Length: 468
Image 1 (cartoon, rainbow, N blue to C red):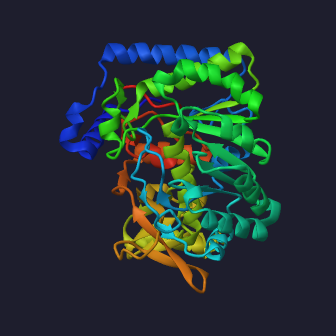
Image 2 (cartoon, helix red, strand yellow):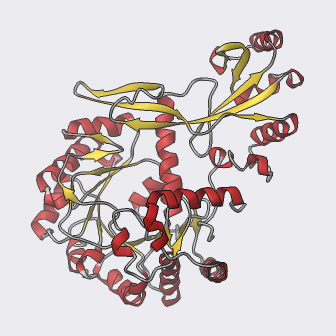
């Protein structure tokens, strides 16, 4: 199902608000160009499907047949990325954030001064993959090696460990130190080095898995076509392509290029997505044995955020709340007179329903219930109220939302907050019946305008981003 007109307008207004006065400098396309681009994308996807490419993660990522081990962990929601420092020695035009301060190792707003604290975090949240990124991690080699070695010592082969680098500071000695510390995979941004594969070739002699990971840059399509076979020859095992995304930081550099921008969850580059799909097609047409994976922005924005919500939810979830497919906490509340609510509570008791699956909602005319209790409810007496929240990881308490502190070690803790993400929605008897039927049957919400505002809280949106 496509985006509603209200949702499109909401995205446009959010995009406009992010860039303020600079928004008017962006070149968005007209409806004719968007229709042409959509048709080309559909044709490319059809061709790729015909050649066996697998589109996964609700149609947001392809070719998924031979993903790198790290990408598999990302898709499963079991990957942690540690930004070991915030400083880089390159100045790529597409970099989304400033890279000029070393800072502390950080992930999801939480700093980790000691490798042992980060290892405790990985253990507590059930991660199976970790990566070291930056900045450029090899600007702080001692720190990088210490975190890799600590994770390997604790987890053994249970943890897949990889490193992102531009390769400029890499030599054989450093590769061997990384390997001996426990590195499984190394990923090169060759866009930072004029697409040189010399360091990737060197790494292939020392590190088990070598990956190239770069944005799909439209003006480099022909260059990259020629690089595919070369990558295969030098031992690169995977090529990951990202979609170019506009940010307030890279704005001035990107607008100097003749790109067409797309509205959406964030502002992205139209030509970047088409470039990635064309490059995958080229590799399949030529029979080049190099797996190419297009990691779209909507994949990252939807699946990585949903994974974070699901990881955090158990720390704040109440028994009567349900975790949705997209990682939100859903609260179903029955509204009625106090006698009817009391009778329903007694019905739950008589049926042996677990006490944690229902609770009075602050007043005696409200009853919070788990979706598992729906068959026990006498619906003629009640109205239905539905609310959604998310569990977010924080470095410190904001005191604006309910929270729990999670102690990792004697010297390290973090906070999980539970935030409401929308106003509670009261259902009519007709919409309640349709909603509850969808929950009971495990099906998508009906294609009714009423459900447009909550659809994304229930399930993962499907497909690549809509062009509008």
